[in-house]
Image (cartoon, rainbow, N blue to C red; front, side, top):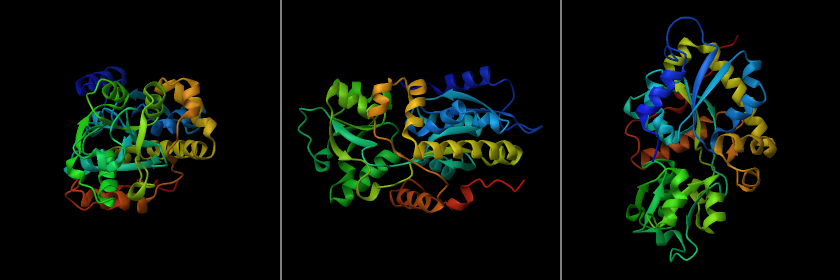
Length: 317
């Protein structure tokens, strides 16, 4: 079961040191970041471990959440300053609905081969993407990047995406749901993908980064316009520190493996085995625009969103 929103809000309020993250007054030197337990958030922990935030004169408090959707209300209310590993589809939909006035600080990760796959039990009759029609498929968050890109793959192959019966199951619980027969397939990301393949001998039926899904941006570090306007130096400091860590993650797999056991509860052996997504070295409005276009075509956005206007650009010091 996912963490209830009220529990998240109480946790942040109790531990946040009083006052909203985007409150008035002096620039903040402490920022509360809601972070998902996914590989997507690795750069946050690399920056913490390697002292990159400290180098920028910034203190970061990390508040774990199972799904980025749980953090959106807290972000909108100023009870957290930033969401790390935030699902871009979820955040863009919140922007579309007017729930938040979003600003993106750093692109996180993009799809890479076998970093997010559809798996089934070894004896399942499901063999191909076509066989998913009429089947119960676990998704971390309904109407998110997962179903969006799986629908695109199915349509590209000429199959009926509308026939898939998506069921919401948090990533950490997908293997158990698959094992118990609550779902017939799981659209699962790392590190949970490798765990399912090891424990259940789960079999991959769809490479989730194939066809039209190849290279799609998945997640990033989001905040609000209010936060960046009231704390421009803190936002810029966070952006520099995480970009530095993203570069580390992109060129040095060891940097990612070192931090994963600490926040994902993975053992070191599994951390070495998982397939990593592609870590972005800089923001890409072009790739974000591709995702927005796909979301618009899929009916997940009602209004046109200009990716350039979402990006936070630090003022010259």
